Length: 162
Ligand SMILES: CC(C)(COP(=O)(O)OP(=O)(O)OC[C@H]1O[C@@H](n2cnc3c(N)ncnc32)[C@H](O)[C@@H]1OP(=O)(O)O)[C@@H](O)C(=O)NCCC(=O)NCCS
Image (spheres, rainbow, N blue to C red):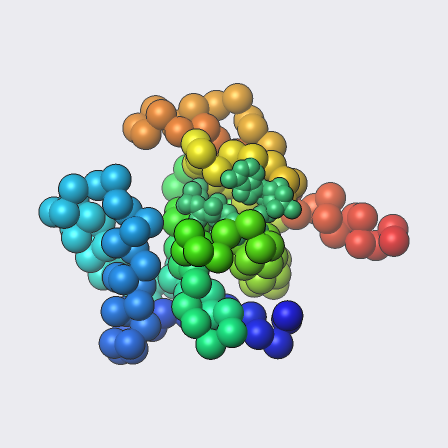
């Protein structure tokens, strides 16, 4: 399975991957109206190439099956990893791909010295909790979503212990 799974960064001059992000984004952002969705996707794409910010596609068996937008936070929780967008296509859910996708992202963030990760969620809370995130009890004022966090330190400790 690991050979079939690839974390693919979307870069500024790679039209094929940008188109794939837009295609997957149409479903991910389907709750937004057309204009809002276009504006939002453009705002993400316009920031490509900024340091400590990544747009990833997940490739599985030669097919693009997911997207993620990740950064190292500079404002609310400086130095923390922040997952802004995360998505697996509906036809490939509950196969463990989301878990593996996150694990690849976690490895990248850990390699950058990140010690904690945070994100906002509603429907996906059971997914994030199954990956070791905890509800902080805080609610994001702007979106009304729940704030979840995960420490990478305890994972370091447990891997040392085992
Ligand atoms: C959330 C999402 C990324 C999960 O991806 P996935 O590939 O289906 O997740 P996995 O198969 O790796 O699931 C891992 C574990 O998470 C939990 N989980 C995943 N989806 C779940 C669901 N819908 N309900 C309850 N638990 C769920 C389960 O414990 C699962 O393990 P199991 O299948 O052995 O029971 C996917 O459903 C999705 O893209 N949803 C729409 C976009 C979204 O909500 N993104 C998150 C933004 S914060």
